[in-house]
Image (cartoon, helix red, strand yellow):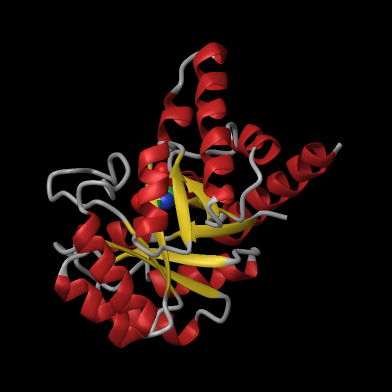
Amino acid sequence: MIKLGVNIDHVATLRQARRTFEPDPVMAASLAILGGADIITVHLREDRRHIQDRDLKLLRQIVFTKLNLEMSISREIVDIAIETGTERVTIVPEKRQEITTEGGLDVVSQNREITNVVKRLKETGIIVSLFIDPDGAQISASKDVGAEFIELHTGNYANARDDKLRNKMIENLRTGVEIAKKLGLKVNAGHGLTYQNVGMIVESLDIEELHIGHSIISRSVFVGIQRAVSEMKELIFKHTYNHYK
Ligand code: PXP
């Protein structure tokens, strides 16, 4: 079954709204794991708008499943990833003004910088994933720079407003998965996925992991994080059955 990575940044966003100590993303991680999260993801942004260095340190100690750090290729953050000894890193583009990650990483034009960062991370045993659009050139470049995983950006699929466009976006993703697998890359997917649109992804794509944040944390406001995660896991399970039918 496809594994579920739960991004808990929004819990830290709420805490930072008051610069206080609650709600604590560390507590959220424990409850998400109880609900069945296979991976806990946080994005340590250069501007520290939500997750703080302290969160990462504590999460490293208490997350007994897998901890995935989303990050830019800034030297400061790469050093922190190595110091913390997180198992997994997903490199994402990062702009100060954006509300959330917009678009995939441009591995083609940043080939040299990304190669150096991937090399440094891999030398310390960290598994590296690159967040990219389902584009053949970006997928090949990801292989060239030494990544083991890619995460295909599902934003265009999630934002598609009609079936025709949605099907086209699924086809792009499916082709992306095929290209990546032929190159020996492992494939994840994420961004903009919800309880309503995750089914088609599970049924259509042969991938390893889904990475979901906003929708799960939004539901958790009403039902609690443990239940919100377990409901997403159940959906993935249900659609996995259809995938093989
Ligand atoms: N994957 C990556 C690489 C991301 O940057 C994000 C957002 O932080 C997600 C997945 C989760 O996206 P969403 O919050 O829309 O589920």
